[in-house]
Amino acid sequence: MSDQSGRPARKPFLYVVVCAAGVARDADRLFAAAQDVGWEVGVIATPQGLGFLDTAAVEARTGYPVRSAWRSPGEPRPLPDPDAIAVAPATFNTINKWAAGISDTLALGILCEAYGLGVPTAVLPAVNSSLAAHPAYVESLRRLRGMGVLVSPRTPHTPKSGEAAPFPWEDALELLAPVLSGRST
Image 1 (tube, helix red, strand yellow):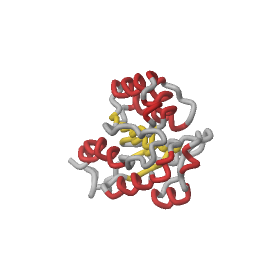
Image 2 (image 1 turned 60 degrees about the vertical axis):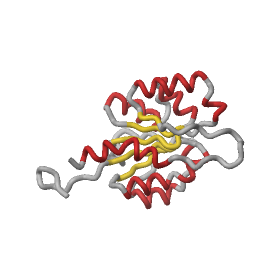
Image 3 (image 1 turned 135 degrees about the vertical axis):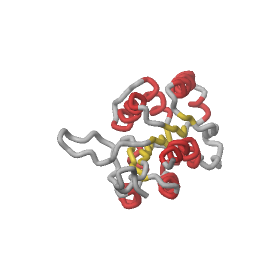
């Protein structure tokens, strides 16, 4: 496949922002599914989310370094610009900071900039029902939706209720499918 100039077409690039939620250990399901449908994937982890990933395995799968910290001035950018972003799993803390415009980590800086750049973004919250009832969280989701962020329709996990429902990794790709299909026309 080539672009209009005859050069090989670049695959669309998906940033996956991974936060510190227990289900993050299974984030490779999203990376593999995204690659299977035609995305290249780069992973940005929150500082705490980094501990939930096997960075060597993620880097081997994606071909890119897992990012969690700002790069130093003059360092090359390790990832191409994103065509879309999936925040999965997204924690209570990240959702609230992002909606408030707080940019105190690389992940939040990328999410805050994505709005101004018009990068399509989907979010899959991994928030227990007690935290999901908090008015700040409810308002944050309202604000993110108002910014055009695509929010998974699935309900949050319930706290300590035994077997949790499977995490809806596929929602990210379903929400972002128009981005991928728009590139192939």
